[in-house]
Length: 281
Image 1 (tube, helix red, strand yellow):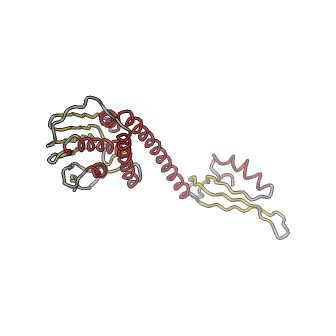
Image 2: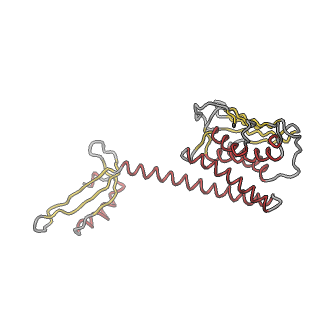
Image 3: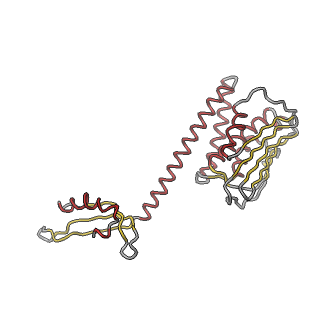
């Protein structure tokens, strides 16, 4: 029998199972066994028990084995899911902490802080919802853009986008969602969306080698004056987002409107077949 137990588990048989059986007990353990035909190792639930005659005398031992390959594969998948979930939770809490701390530093009043924190955390939650719907590891850029812009659209078609759909990993999806939220918030307060005639366009391009470029362009709004200080939103856009895409960002406060450019890379061969382009209605 020992020949059919994988070498790594033979010590378990000798030190745990055998003593129990000799003492007349039944023993159940998970072992890796060698398949009779192929000699491949197979995870199994191994049960060994004493067999007695009608008078209670020991006459042998019985063995029952059950292939638990599917069970172990399911356990491994669940462990990976839990590890990814724990990593996402840790990252999300770190982002929330940064949002709260930096917003409190830059806001002028507690009411302003409360409003900004609520909206930023809501934007983060929206990004997490998209990731949850996509099993947590990636999200379509179209879904991220639409989700980030929806709360800021007035239903008048003044925000539009164009570009191929593509998968973003979890940090990229969250980072882009937060950046678009900050840009849209600024546009609604001071930029193209603060008046009646302004418009915002978002365009992006993904090359076959994975090079990625996204541009946010405002036009038709009031003349733009560069801010005298860098707040949380500008800091997030200029310093935090680029590394998620292994690239860089540029934020320009031009007289005709704010322009934002993100240049980086995306995983190759993950483009989807969903239609490109859209406009919030």
